[in-house]
Length: 132
Figure 1: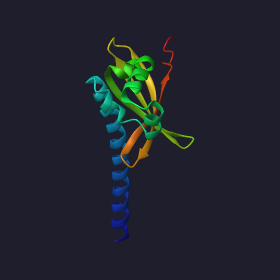
Figure 2: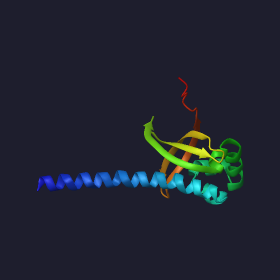
Figure 3: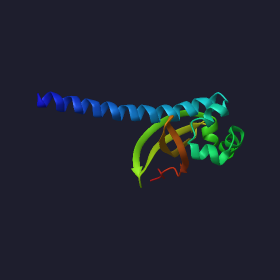
Figure 4: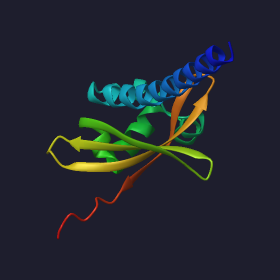
């Protein structure tokens, strides 16, 4: 009986981790899709409450993304890479290929809210030097 309980507990733990993964991935992918479709108001809903308060409106937010993160405003291929905890914050590494075919590495800080996972910050990372 103890073995069945342990197996059930492991399955529930794995399901919880999978649900967390799907929520984070879903948030990032949904925001990227909203940007692809030109729906900045929808993309703004995936920002954390702190970011929404900071920018105040979808228009201001969209302008900031256009100037600072053009690869996000018009993303091509999006690849979710590793996820890690840094100083208590959850960060998701993402590779975005822009419309010109250039790759960009970004780190997304994610926060869990009553509405689900939201994007709290994005950092553009330097591409690793691949020259030998």
